[in-house]
Image (cartoon, rainbow, N blue to C red):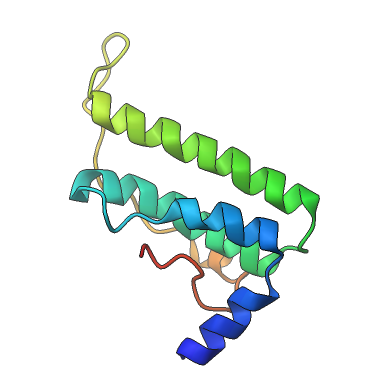
Length: 110
């Protein structure tokens, strides 16, 4: 399986691999890991299923920026006005979304 994963990673454009490295999440606390892992899951899905071009790289960079905002939101814990306390667990991406990717995860939260 590792050889297959390494081969899959090698097929990614260098700029895509460079952005994906920032989606690692195992070093985060459990609460932040849950938020970050969902973005990593989506990033891996897109990297494995879309053409390796500039638009993919830009999309991954924007997703990375959004992930950073989500993590900061989870860290702050404060809300703007009356709203219920956010649930800290997130459902997995739908099976239909995940069908786009037939390869192993590139990030794996390492």
